[in-house]
Length: 71
Image (tube, rainbow, N blue to C red; front, side, top):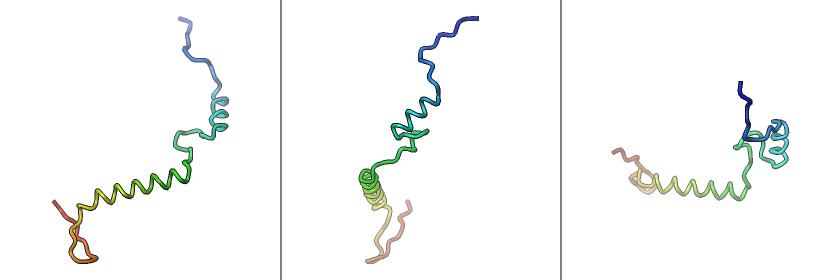
């Protein structure tokens, strides 16, 4: 058998998890929470994009009534 050569250092998984907890990342990438200001800004941008996209999907029937346009 060949001697196994590793390119990376042998690091204990516990050390790695401890480092991620210290940096406030958590076990998974998506566990990290966003800043409230950034979250609010991204939510507003998403709603604005949705409004622009859906604007052409409806036909105004009256002042307050809209009808979905089916192509």
